[in-house]
Length: 417
Image (cartoon, rainbow, N blue to C red; front, side):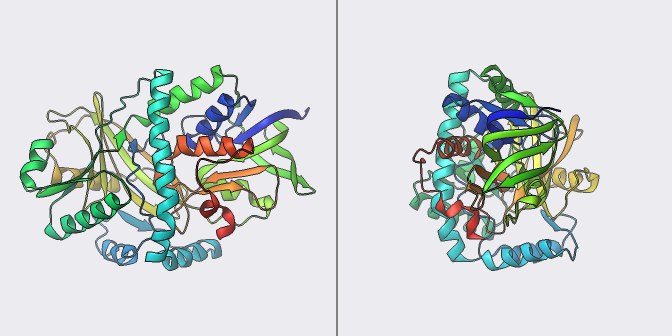
């Protein structure tokens, strides 16, 4: 089988890979995308669809360990779970995560997460307007709902921190909250509205983006897993796949939770663990939420998407399969009923499980490989793979073209590990 030549080869055809392809094509590069499954059908397609520049606090933050232990004592409603394993890489990840749950890590993470989140939000609006994508895009913000004074007070403190970093946030008392969101139950006592956020149907957006990059000239190979690499003189010479070998001037590795497995021959330390999450999608309810919501105490996301409603939740570290747990889907529905007026009988038409690539410090990995001069890493976005996709696509295109990047990427380089 003849070796295929490529200018820029992107490994991964979900949110990050497709956004990289889009911005590289716009810059004039020729792009080849290889995907182990189908493009636009990856782990971002079934998520909440929230575009959240407000999410500048990393998962590894003070209080996370305590909350995790408390949640695990109540597995019936816990939004968090962990695989039990003695795998050295998994245990190393857990230790690193525990050490990163500090104020120092938060202060280190806020600038790059803020810059990337704001860039992505602007790019989403631009892509959807310029390409005329119809994907239920709504710039209505993200509304947090709270049922306890303790959680509401914590939410207010977080909102005040966001405001200091230029993120618009409105604190709503009970009356203001219920006027803004009539779908909330009477015992919801307040909320915080991050008015700069947005939401859309992620599967529709990614489908349209996949079609667009093909029309722009991308060569796409689906069902083409990578089996290895040939490396010489600090450069990747060949990418070995089920469709034969590829040679490329530049390679972008954007394989999500599978990135460490794909890169196992490259002698890179990429501490990414899969974090399984679930969603359940149903027909529109009689009282549809007006906004994208996040249920404060339960960490469940609510997403109105045209004639559908999606509930999303749960974070299970270390689970690599995408089996849907009926128990956890039922828990997500129960949590939603605690906060919202939902129909007694729901017309459910999809349940889903997906994997988020999660780093121990809660920041993505974006940057050139320290060992391979033609390899760029773009992974580890955790629950924000959709939200941070267009910003990541832009800065990766800038890296490939050796232009100055939109903001300083040094805190996101893999060498930090």
